[in-house]
Image (tube, rainbow, N blue to C red):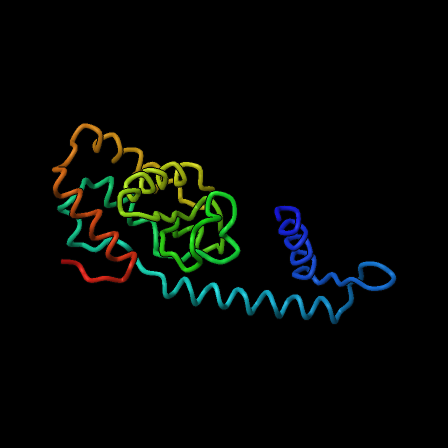
Length: 184
């Protein structure tokens, strides 16, 4: 199955660049290049529509529940859904359409992969949130000033841990927003 998906990936990648298989080998013509360009534009428009639909997971009323670090960190993500093509590897058992969150800078650049997080259960939400900062530190699209602010706030967060009950409420709100439910 892995080899089949790999071959399919390369076939789709070649088509997206305008390459077409023929009896005499792979060809590139003005027609195939134009078709590939039109398909890319359509796909990009679809992704932009999905990004527009994607929403922030934090609201101003959440600020008092958690540290400035946690609030700022979760301000750097937006709601996304798992695509069928992403249901491979560790995500193989996950259902297409599962809600999650992703780095907003990567979303704006139409990136997929390790910038997207899909907690399958409420109890795994805190660990997925911790993975966000790891991603932000490595993300080439995240502005340097955001990385610096998160690092500074993380130090303060370590010394001033908030109320566990408030943090639980914050996680519950994030979980509700992932699934488009109303807060209690």
